[in-house]
Image 1 (cartoon, rainbow, N blue to C red):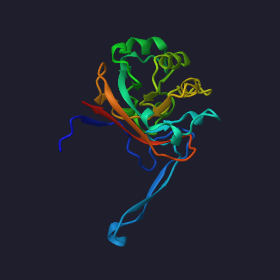
Image 2 (image 1 turned 180 degrees about the horizontal axis):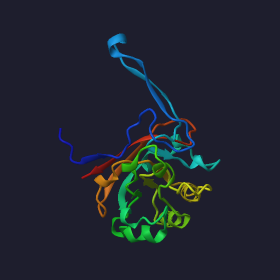
Image 3 (image 1 turned 60 degrees about the horizontal axis):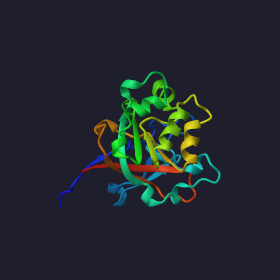
Image 4 (image 1 turned 135 degrees about the vertical axis):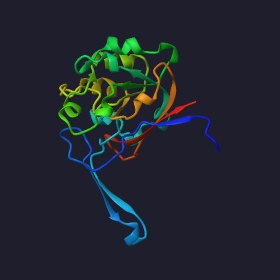
Length: 219
């Protein structure tokens, strides 16, 4: 049966020694069973839940916030738009006026995906790890006021690295808005167009977040 929509995979491939948050231990993905030797294949994973493309649940920064396994399934799917900010980056802080300039009011999105082009720089370099752009607290409040229930970015964090208070995180998570980080291939989506986004984090009991497979459906 031919699907009635095109599927865009927005997920970074997980691999040993991939670029992760600077203070995180490097992930390890290793084979423990081999087809030629054992007749089946199996791998062991050792990494943080916030590795690669992943979701931050409210519990990540809020003691009484929802953990990832308790986010309702219908909040993980919704109308999404991509905001192409690549030509508006000046420094590491993305202000509210930049977000407003790209906002497609007529589409009434439930999920906003912020495209900075940073996924194309994915590598353990100082620029990728420390100089990525993130949104200001004011931009986070403006997005929350639009009624979104999810915000995603193709950088390592929704806050710029130098914001050690993680203010944008807290603004969004306090409103019950989940965050996707380290998305990939956002340039495959067109600005001004609506997609159905499926954000599927691992359902880990009482976890602050989880690695996710993220798909955008284009009908």
